[in-house]
Length: 606
Image 1 (cartoon, rainbow, N blue to C red):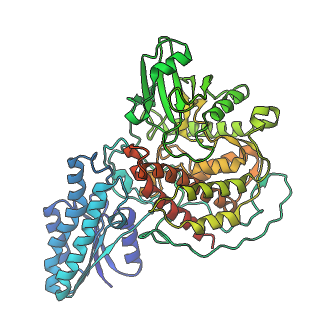
Image 2 (image 1 turned 135 degrees about the vertical axis):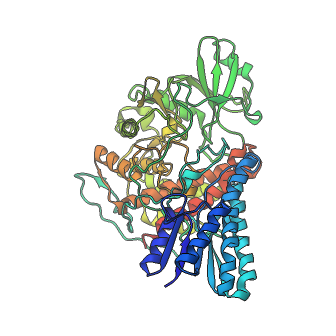
Image 3 (image 1 turned 135 degrees about the horizontal axis):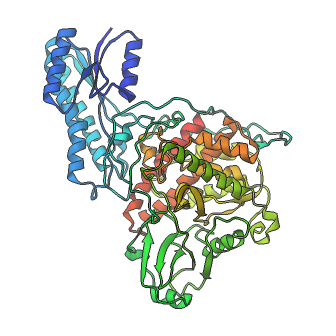
């Protein structure tokens, strides 16, 4: 039996460690700001002195000190201010230093004991956009190693633990003002999310989901190739997909609702174009101002202000592009053809395929008035309203998939017949190979698994392929009602479950791990938002598909892989100097994270 003190033990990893120690018969002193056996602010020397006195009186000594309490921080090196650096350093580094300084004299006297400092994988692999957090966690690693050398002669050992991706509420404490990465207000310390989750298992090619009433399809079991090489510093368990959380508590933040929910900003120099040439082509009067929307990382979107209206212009980015990508004429044609049967597309104004005008094709459309959500919901929305918004949003996707493309030649022409799933797997794998950079990991085990476990198509429908809350426009007078669906760049005729799987890759729940939370571009973690499992269940119920958790696993892995390819294509442009947008600096580490997350899902089927 050991006598163990754990900081930050009221919830999260600290609580889990305390429970594990107690289960094996150890005596544990749980400390935290609130909710523990002993109140301990790790930034207070007085509190640490009181903790030492308490341990002396209670036990007469200590066997293990676990420095676990900490907070999260984000922001790029040149954006995060020094106050944020001081805040996270005071807690995550000096909190551990104070703990050592308080208890080392006791451990030296007893000539025994262990120190366990909880750092992070971020202290070893240093992803972009987390400069302060990476630095202090790396410092905790160095602190621990130094303590180990200094205390070894006294029989005291020091150990550092670098956990990676699992669900806690550590992100509730995130502080940062980097708008390129999103702003999260600091809230409570670590906590434990609900541990309910969908099941998983190995799939088989040809044995995928089917419409209710369809005969079962024969399938074959496919082998899985050996594990491929992983990026340095990323291990098999680094991206464990944790439990589904059913509406955990998250305090919404961000700006209040307005009809300009996606404010346009001054145009970046690299994205500027000849405004006068566009005005002459439009023939609608002088363009008094052009601004650029910050949302999105693929095609460029601009607001054009004319004498009597505002219009939207879309054009492709500069630099190398995948074949078939950023096709403005195609995007324009799809929306024009869809408008008579799907009321949520903007009205098209015109298409220009003459690249000599501004250096690329472009099209112009009417602006849909309403709100476009970004990372956070307006504080005025209740959980019931948020749930209704969620339901309405995914019902719009069901509505889109119900359009009979065979009755509309322009839409039917997008289809290439059966085999959509196979073409998607092959196509995205090929795109990934062409966008590789020197830091790209070995994805062969993931791509092999996708190849060997792909199901047959369940249907041929019009798929959006980028359906997210931040591509929807909400009615100005009712934020639960959808009045517009934007960004049709990747729309085509294909498998509806592949469309849903792609959307779920962007759906970051409140209970997801701290790194995946940084991917969040929509308020999918807010109170009232549905879990991924609930969305899939609702969609399949309305669309008439029977999909088991084992069958859904393929669509989940493919969606994450596809997201990784999109991120890698953007990272390729940034790494090769084809864009100077510093927001793209985090895309390389994001690809590495998605690799680990995909691999974990694949490993769970074995």
